[in-house]
Length: 409
Ligand SMILES: CC(=O)SCCNC(=O)CCNC(=O)[C@H](O)C(C)(C)COP(=O)(O)OP(=O)(O)OC[C@H]1O[C@@H](n2cnc3c(N)ncnc32)[C@H](O)[C@@H]1OP(=O)(O)O
Image (cartoon, rainbow, N blue to C red; front, side):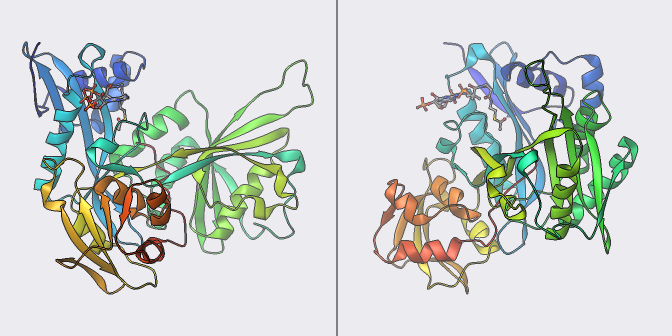
């Protein structure tokens, strides 16, 4: 069987890496025009590549450096893993496993405590220590039934901005509230051109509207209008599909929803991957105007440095628990193996007897506040050594707001 080796990608290999990734994801070939737009946001740095014994590229694992907001509001250095692919004639021979090992070792050596990604399939990344840490829901609001309660979202104004204004204003606006919720990531400058080129300044024709409240601009929505009428349903109006809706305050958020639900000739407003706790039904006189159409895993998180990650977040009001954390594969990041006492007054390594024992992938899925230790006990993913401990851990790790990323990378 042919051999392969993995190394950091070198300058000049970026386009081949992108072409391989796009092909693995069944996208269109990378034209010169597309490459010219991508080149600035697709550096060689942060890429591990696999080559066969002829030196031909067969796999790519890419990441960029960013920050992720953890419960309590601290922003922790994070590798956003933004492109993973293995050439179809090289899959299931350990190429991804080798690239993940190289990437994790590099991140650990550089002192990056977290990695995060959006997974193409739910079965790939658990074996590398990732856990599904945030979820999003799909919603469709039937506009004819959707009457807002009196006064909801009335104290601001919404205005369209041109594509050029959007490019100018929206990144700064996003920066103002990017730290708001566990799971948010900072969007580096190189993230935005791809977003605007694809959706706003290119052919897709998304509209961008900005909300202004008493203190100025405080939210924005990016959406497109899809004509779904046909001969059988001439009475139907358009479907508005939200791509992004972010706001600094609940009032700005409500004002943006008011705007979307006020657009004429619209039958429904759809959002995908919205926060699990987004209270749209609460705005309406008839909560049944809102249909939840799907729940999908959003951000997968990997704790590369378990102690640093646990120390960085805050905890709810409960007595401490001692967690025994096991790496999924000992050879990956063995320094993480051990016992940690976790409580409101801090986190330390300990030699005390453990209350709960769990894999680093399970801890990652609970880290940002999604889900309950108790449920993971039922799933056999948390071993209980002290019967009262799971309920304590539930309270310690719970967050008031559901974690959510809301940025696709
Ligand atoms: C963050 C992102 O970019 S997500 C996008 C990920 N990329 C894609 O989905 C593109 C299409 N798929 C691919 O390129 C490849 O199939 C990859 C990257 C998913 C997997 O690469 P491979 O080199 O085949 O993985 P590798 O051989 O190291 O497999 C390791 C283990 O994971 C399993 N595995 C890997 N991919 C899958 C999968 N899609 N479904 C089920 N099991 C899988 C393998 O069976 C193997 O299991 P084992 O250790 O029990 O034998």
